[in-house]
Length: 184
Image (cartoon, rainbow, N blue to C red):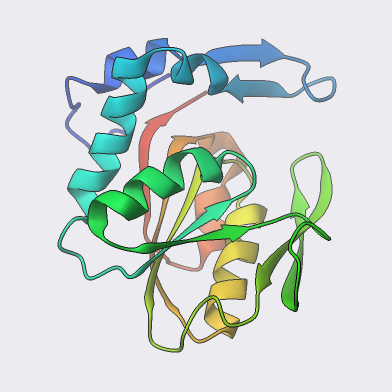
């Protein structure tokens, strides 16, 4: 794991990086899976991760934190609570009761779909999209599309890890992306 070159390294980052396990060939051959479940086993590293995001987004007038299923559900709610925003789960198909809007997207190892309840976001609300990792950018693009279709302004996307070789940042159409570390 490395810190992006354009950032000074926060002293909390090495502990966070060292707590993330890399699992080769998961979920299929050739994928180096970044397993944040080991980060969750280290309460200090987990707290530091949430705190770094909270420090960045406090006072930014964000009223919506949208977490991408499933790992965005881990980081999103504590960030939302700390900054006084609501949390909106962006779910896989047929997981939300009620009327939803959907967005299909391409992953680095397949295709998927995200859904959001209609009415969860009001026009003009300022939103932050949270996930554990950006690879090809397809998931974050789908999340931003759902929020923007509902009238929200996506302020930024936030991820713990970026896989820069997959160039996901380039697919975000200039939308700011905040990450804690890169994995090569």
